[in-house]
Image 1 (cartoon, helix red, strand yellow):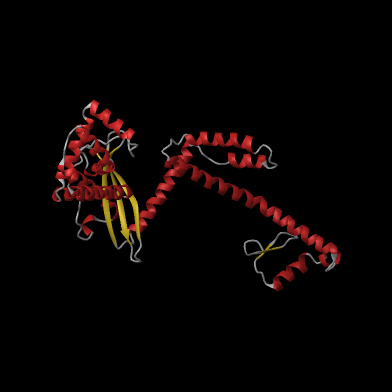
Image 2 (cartoon, rainbow, N blue to C red):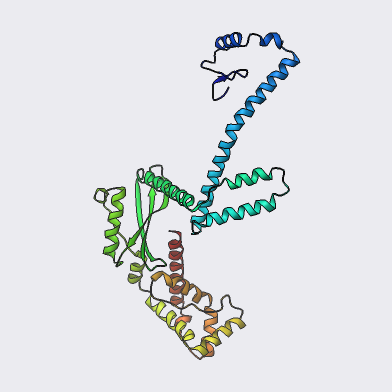
Length: 344
């Protein structure tokens, strides 16, 4: 049987029907002398049948083996192209990777009996710049199709926009989508990357986002959506913790602003074998940047108290339980928001 069809091992003719009567008619009509020259249950007949089977398998392998090798080479080309794109390497590095693989095979497989087959298989992997570009484009298109398919089945979804600058100082708006499906499963994925040509105001982000959403589903056909931007920053304005941040920033600046005091503080940390060697400066650009500053301040709080005592400075807040509770709460809150921001 070859691909669910009967093939005669004597004449290699394919029979349309695999019924017993058709097979007997073909054998008696075309190979009637076979039973006379090779009697049934004889050793000669058994050997001849084994020889015919081996010949048929050998002929099949001439076609199936190259096809399998080509498939494996194509799969390897996709894997390497994905690796180059993942590590942001130029597509021309594919040729370098192939050359390095050939040199490795020449050395590592030198003592192998099938070294020539290995070298031939490695050379068959296509990694030219144009080929790698096509592979990456095909994978990108496949991912895009999967996201579009998911977007046609969601029950609830939410969008998140994150604006940042690339190496060319161009504002990029990264759009993430989180979908909830009818079977109670959820999925999060990168939806698209949008370019902000000039300004990055909320109005500009909204305008470019409406252009993006029209690609997937008309914006005005979506259910009522409540846009929320920088919720944690807005909450920070309402929940007043300025009495915590003001003192923390003041103490950090008083220690790090003057070179002598800074050196003495670092020497004290080294002498006390502290967990960290210095404090972090606070840059009031993004609200979430306070998280690491506060965490470092809390970790070095005993050393900070000791250093302030050597300078005869007293701050009642550092001994006030309520202020310390507010400090701990704000530190934990910003640390949690930082972790959440990194996961999105």
